[in-house]
Image 1 (cartoon, rainbow, N blue to C red):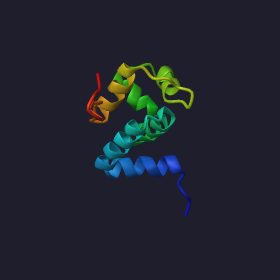
Image 2: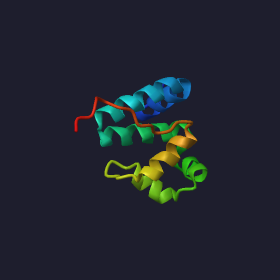
Image 3: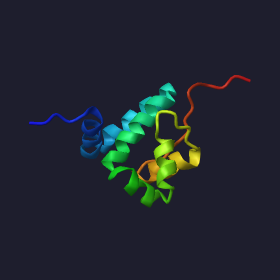
Length: 101
């Protein structure tokens, strides 16, 4: 039996449990770790048919999407929003504490 690599295993987990995927992304966003966010989005892209399928559904350029999700990527908010929309999710803003003036 062949072992799956970590990215493939995570993609399968995200497919099987979309609620976990949502919770995981929210945890990453709370911590503010962009590198970890890009890893999770790459893994989720696999769960949604890979970058070519994601590019088609988001109407983003496939090459640019590969670059956006690369370890050195710096995705625009519009690209993240488009990717999440295809995955049935969206970004939201929530208060973290009472603002001080």
